Length: 167
Image (cartoon, rainbow, N blue to C red; front, side):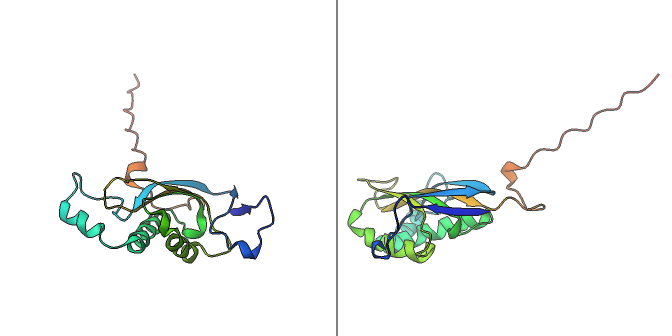
């Protein structure tokens, strides 16, 4: 699989850009991950108030670190990691914290190939104490033969046909 960052102008070192303008992909599969945040992707519904308080603890940095941990879990389940991320849509309630976001993002993605991204300031997210939510697209390797598939995506076996008796 080949991932190629696309730069429409020369990317000067002084830019220290935390994102790329675009990516092109050859081979592999596209993975779309839904809004990841400080709360684990799969959790009880209706929400458990005690668990929620635990997940929403901490400042912007703590919530951002947990959010990127949850993104990595999803990427690894698909056979990828942060280097496979092509595009992020990031929603924050505290735009003044974007330098913290950029620091954590640079650590996760490295300086060479940061993903394309959009950063949007919003007044509130799904929970009043939630400060960040991220969705995105990654290009992960083609599924290897024998790779375990999610139970939800497994094809159900076809029922055996009854043999007709010949006369």
